[in-house]
Amino acid sequence: MTTPTLAVEVLRAPRARRANTTFLVSVGIVAVMTLAAILAPLIAPYPPDQVDLGAVHAGPSAAHWLGTDALGRDLLSRLIYGARTALLGPLLVVLSSTVLGILLGLLAGWRGGWLDAVLGRIFDVVFAFPSLLIAIMAVALFGKGLVAPVIAMSIAYMPFVARLTRSLVTAERSRPYVAAYRVQGFGGGWIAFRRVLPNVTPIVGAQSTLNFGYVLAELAALSFLGLGVQAPTADWGAMINEAQAGLIGGYFLPALVPAVAVVVVVVAVNVIGEELSDRIGGEIPA
Amino acid sequence: MALADPAGRTAARSGGAWVGTATLRRVGGKLGALALTLFLASLLVFFSRFLVPGDPVSFLLRGRKPSPEAVAQVTEQYGLDLPPWQQYLNWIAGVLHGDFGRSLQYRQDVSTVIGERLPVTLGLVLMAGLMIAIVGIAAGIVAALNRGRVLDRAVLIGLTVLGAIPSFVGAIVLIAIFAVQLGWFPSFGSGEGGLDTAYHLVLPSIALAIVFVVLVGKVTRSSMVDQLDREHVEVATSRGLKRATVVRRHVFRNAIGPILTVSGLLVAGLLVASSIVEAAFGLAGVGSLLVQSVDRLDFPVVQAIVLLVVAAFVVVNAIVDLLEPWIDPRSAAGAGAR
Image (cartoon, rainbow over all chains, first blue to last red; front, side):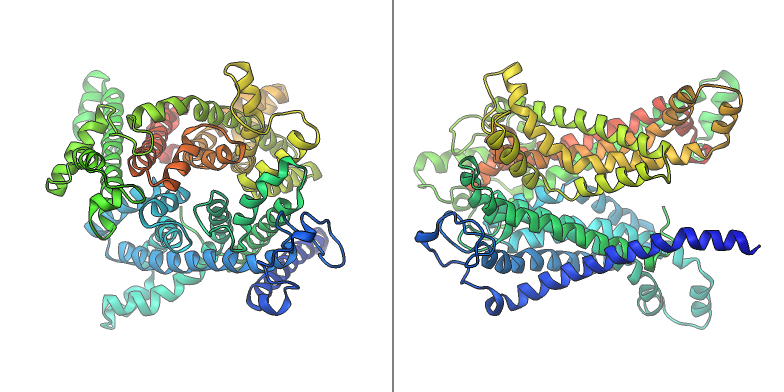
């Protein structure tokens, strides 16, 4: 009996350790980026908008670790400041879509009936609008910047959260503990908010973190299109937008630096999200 | 569904028309849901304008001189002097006849402006779609057949990395390497038509395809793996059928359903992401028109494109949904018969 168990452990051990390293590295990356965003004015070597026409398109050097852009602005400093909008936007979207989705999903799953049907139809319709399209539409209505897209994308991501919450709540509703509370005379609203909600929230929350990477990429895309964060501001998407003209001239760094930052953070965030949803697990009903 | 249809059952016993009735009901139900979703989406697209506080004429003519001519045009186009529901009815009646009003920046019909740019976008989406299907399915099959081995892990890691590369990043990297450094492909414009256009669309299509390959690849892998474990595959193998035949006829054929469903969901993503790729490569397509129209405050064009993208997404998914029983007859009998 011992041999197979041992074999399994031997097989599993290196894999588990590797997954853990990837996870820790990812946490490290996100932590560094977060610190960079918060402490930007303290750690950035230059002000992000400091133009230096004597050092236009400079390569990496001791003075400019990552080189400079077409206006001689320091790329490292702009990268550090750019982490602010890059992380803040997705954070707001994930938080608000999760809160909104959990509340609506709880309502739909707990009450059921016509309310569930109506909400389900609303989720379907919102689901038919790709999130980036809703964000673009919001810019068309309310103007460029980060505010309108963030609100729009919170709504766009809500149905994913709401559907998951609804299915979890529906499964939860038929569990014995709910009936037990009912028999004791507790009200439906109390059970839903005080007992069902805390059981459902961790699973939904872990799943929601998986949206962070998508939102980050989409908000960066919006700035890249010139519809999000506007040009002089150091934002990764806007930086790539500005650096496009230089590409043809062979100046790749001003575009590549923010591009790599986007990819690295998206990967790191996805690894963390997947690990979290694996750990918190929970049966996710189909 | 069978439960809800006692009349159909009786028909089945007496005349064998049960499948026909059930299919009709199913198709009817799906078409009804499709129509309802389209209707609600059109309400959302139209009435979104009412969320903007203030006078609708000044909203529609932001950034432009409210010349009497322009005021008359938008007032007529949207029927701004009518009650809101009447405005919607006029607008949707026009849309159903292919009339999306007039563009403020081009002073042409919106349908003409979009029509001129549609071929580029369709070509781009089609080419990217083919790449996604070929690379994604191939990667998924390779991974599934080498399940648990190094190749499987390598494919999965490769797919995950590709999936983290947004199209604008893919676009600039491709431009830097293949257009500027190597000079193999053009970096700008959509060419002179025909083969030249196809040549101009190679890099944009790759940029568009990159991020979506992972979805098709992973779904192909997992649905193949799911089938490989089943008894009927073992039976087929034990009957002495060649591995390739078993994989083709018993594994892949059964795995197509989820792959198709995911492909349908990709349509919206491709259409929207094409705006990013078109902007990066300077292609005159519908996506870049959308971005430009937002930038130049040309709301009628924005409204039309948003509605068209949503309609395309909903319709394609409805088609995939309707095709499913035709590809996999078991699903017509209900989900329980897997």
